[in-house]
Amino acid sequence: MFVPCDRGGDSAGSGFKGFTLLMPAVSVGNVGQLATDLVISTLDMTKVGYFYTDCLVPMVGNNPYATAEENSTELSINAEVYSLPSKKLVVLQIRSPFIKNKYRPFCQTLLSWVKSSKCARVVLLSSSHAYQRDDEQLLGTPLRYLLTPDLEKAVGGLMRELNWKEMEEVAAYPGINDTEKALHIPGGGITKLLFTESCSKGIQMAVLLKFCSEGDNIPDAFALVNYLNEWLQLIKSESSTDASSQWKIPSSWRLLFGSGLPPALF
Image (cartoon, rainbow, N blue to C red; front, side, top):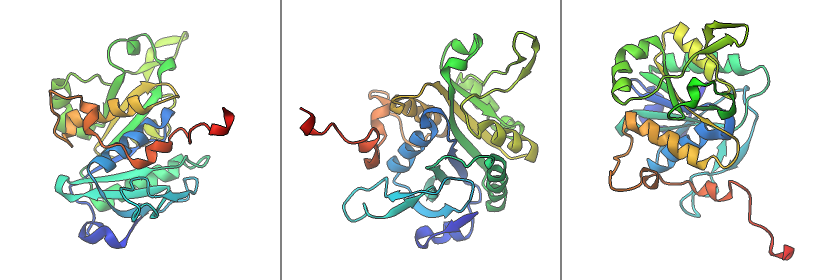
C-alpha cells in the first residue's frame, strides 16, 4: 500500500489521477532499476511516499540521489514513490529483491493501488537473459516492447511509427511442438506475471525491456531509458549530442562496483 510522506503535498493526498506510473522489474542486470534511477535523478523528482509491503527484502540506506552534504543523510528504503506533476509522472523505485513466493501478492497489491489512485497507465522497465533468445530474437535491436490490449488501442500505432519491435512469442515446447507459442521472459522477474495480470484486469500497461547479460549494465540502462524517452519524451533530445550524456547519473552510482582497490595492496 502507498504511504504518503510530509513532502508529498496534494499529489500524495489526492492520488495520481491521469498520471503515468513508471516502475522497474527486479530483473537480470538490474537494468530497469538503473534506468529508473536515471529518470528520478535527471528530472529531480520529489519523493512523495513509499510503498509499504512485506513482499520485498527489507533494506535501508542513504539518499541515493544526494546532491549535497545536507541531503546525503536522508534515509531511503526498499520501495519509494517519486512524483513530477508537471509531466504527470509518478515513479515507484524498487531497491531490493522479492521474497520467495511473494510475486503474486505484490502484483495484486500494486494493481489495486494503480486502480484506486486512477493512474492512466503503467510502464514497466525490465530485462531478459540475452543467452536465452531464440533465432528470431537474435535479429535486429535487443530492445522490445509489450502492450496490454487496452493500451494497444491507444498507442499501438505510435509504436509502429517508431519502428519498435514487439516481444516475440516463442515455442512453448521447443523441439516437441514448435507451433504452440507462448510469452517467455527468462530473467524478467515479475514482468510476465504483472503483464498478464494487467491484461486480465483491463489495466493499460507497457513493458519495455532489453536483452542483456549480468555484468556492467550501465550501458544497458542508458539504452533502455533512451528507448523510453523516444516514446514519452521525458527530456528533450538534442540530435547533435549523445543522448546518454543528457541523463544525470545519481551520486550513488559512484560505488556501484564497490570502493577502489586499497593502496596497501601495492
